[in-house]
Image (cartoon, rainbow, N blue to C red; front, side, top):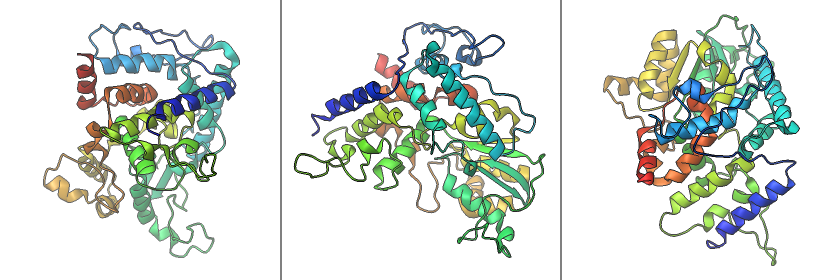
Length: 398
């Protein structure tokens, strides 16, 4: 089975390209193509402009920057600008506007006038289709105790942030008889009226670490949630059956031998875009962050200084937030002891500690692909490529 793995992956990819309405392949070259504006009077993003510098790979920027600039200019830079909305930060309304904007972009690209990478076309297809998940209102939490809106992103401690906001809104559910809090008596969104001027906060995560964390949680942990997509390849509920009507195993289970972790992760990254799951969609597309991050009152990072960013958030918003954050994340002792080496959540047994495992699963090849898929996070959210990834690319070029 291990020998057939490359052939199976190529066969699945070929079937997808034939049956899909149209596949767009980007022309990757040493010099980046800077596309012209989508239409008269419109604007497009430019990674070269946002990251600075020219467009040649031999410039002062390293390989990681070149990969990001090239991929972004050939994909996300083609997204059409959204209509301005003075009341854009309204959770459900914002999600609806963002989805409509992406649907216009997809229609524009599939009209045949624009060439983009195939994975970008499938991304637009999956996030705008039914069940896409990225624009769901469940990415918006809020509370009046104290006033705070929060954008929650899949694989950025979402389970823990649910606990936080359930605790912050606990009083809303004490005498609730309408069923708004559900059987768990929990409300991620307050039942009170939220003033429009309430501040907004979000936590981001290193995109490469987040991708690996999603893989470990959804594809390796043994969960049967159907989030390790495409399910027909990695998690067939009914099973692909052979001539004797016996189901094949999960494709990842068939990889054996030295370097198994890298092979498994590489296989997943190769075919991930055949069906984009919300847990792997770029962070910048959640809560319309790619065009609104500058309006947020607080932006934290779930990295090595995660506990210190939690402390900064607690200080900024006050009220019961310090106590509730500490009850969920246990950040106070880490701040007191000067722990700048956060490697994952230590509460609830849900941590995958992806930061400790990156070199075990990543190769230079998977780093390149991941940077291409997730380039929008680096360009629009101001995130930096970690040193270990740059070093991996550098050593591969030697």
